[in-house]
Length: 301
Image 1 (cartoon, helix red, strand yellow):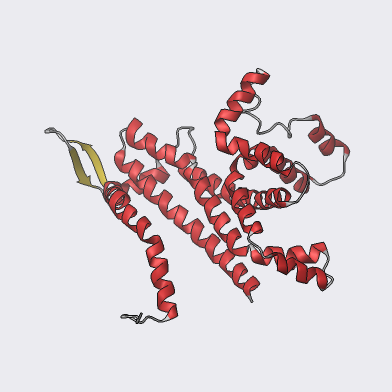
Image 2 (spheres, rainbow, N blue to C red; image 1 turned 45 degrees about the vertical axis):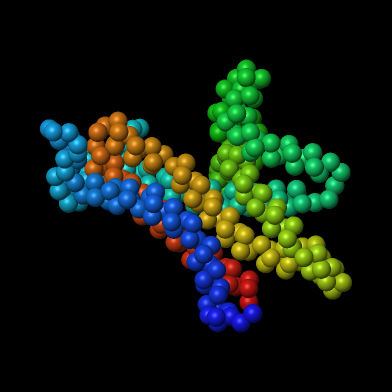
């Protein structure tokens, strides 16, 4: 059958990509565009209740933004700039940890050994049930709250004390390591979906690539860096972006914005915090994408 509208291959790819994101664009325009516009509008106004009902707006320019960082504090009495700095630092340190741990767990789950199915079920069961349900069950069965307060267990342990006082390892190396071990429970709880994505990516690599590498005499180490890693670089980019967005969704900044808007009746200030929060998310995502795209292109050459 003759094609009525002949298109170039490049144009078809662009059209397919547009059709792929079209449902998201429609959903964004129907559900998020108007609230986003209103949030920006509120952030430049002092919002109060009108005598006749409804909302009353008084244009205040950038006053809400200035007050946010000069006069306002968080619910824990910290400056806003400190909240943003802590949040960005937490993301920059935790995201690489979660991505590497997810890849490590996916590689283990992808190995062929007896009882692999049972191990996978045990690992992914908390993700299916939800971490909160599992921690509640552990707290009930152990009769303690240590499960929910696991952060800091290693740094307060006897092993940590031994390492700090009876070894010559410099604190500049030891303290970050102890800090990362303390976060292992949080990392484990946040790496389930990423592990599944990596596992699907590892199983999509053609076995013929490994056979060729084996015939050429490549070692396991060389096969990992020359076959496995280049084959999952695009997945790593996706996993990293997913992890960054997931961490921002759980950020305490969104709780502070809710507190300003609905608990302290400062809708303008809460809206200004939301706008800065969105810009901060876009900035971090832009930096992550810029850096990772260069790494992906390097592996594609």
